[in-house]
Length: 242
Image 1 (cartoon, rainbow, N blue to C red):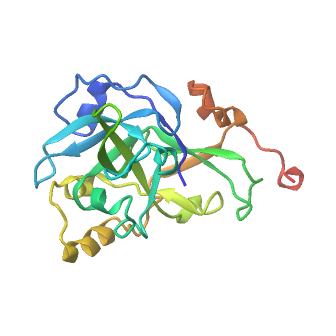
Image 2: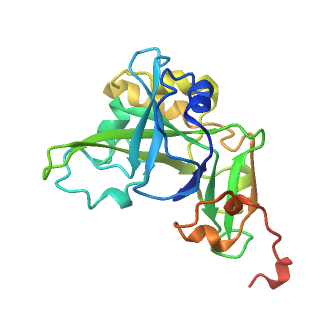
């Protein structure tokens, strides 16, 4: 599960980091608490090589092209990698409309299965402070009331691994730079290519380069958006957590 994340980067820096051609796009101002249905930038390519990249904007929460209304959007912020190729809401986008969703970091809340107090929020980011490139999918939905197109996107998640296991059982699929072009290729996947792409993003060390620390409960309120939300706090001794 990934239900909140942070993005603190200009359009110019985003274009440089992801080798995208349109640095002038007006991306959302720095927001350290991006929540579902919020407009977000994503990176997509329109060639087979996956290197003709552009920054686009979407609402976070995918609406399938066949949906009659937008009521499903807030529930479709994450697409599970285990079912993305078969689930009707996501399979078309996975085959043809793959993207990268950049993040400065993301938040996760501890479950009762880990070593921390349940619902304790944590901030997770790259150790080197570079942007996290989350594998995503996007879709265009036509609002039947206005006939206007709306672009929406979802983050792909997987079973957690490595250092993040004590927090939660899920994590975003985070792609290293070496896989960006392959993932962003405009190739529309045939049936015999689907497994190839699923294996490509099934990384052996999906937590490589990540670090995490506990943060205050203020991140629970989506109206809070400042950088202080990602500030590290001290947890009480383990014996006093419950």
